[in-house]
Length: 41
Image (cartoon, rainbow, N blue to C red):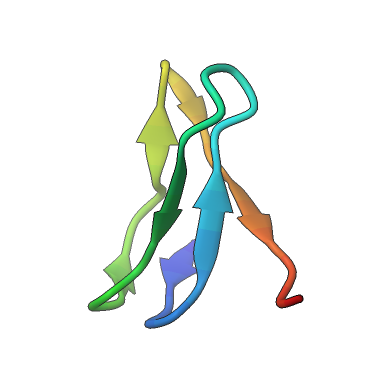
């Protein structure tokens, strides 16, 4: 997975949301699970 600048992600376990400032390769992980990319609203 490649995180791109300005994308938002959610952890369904704890509810934290993060916004990518500088993109890069790898998987965003929180609470031991991959975070879910949110669609633009």
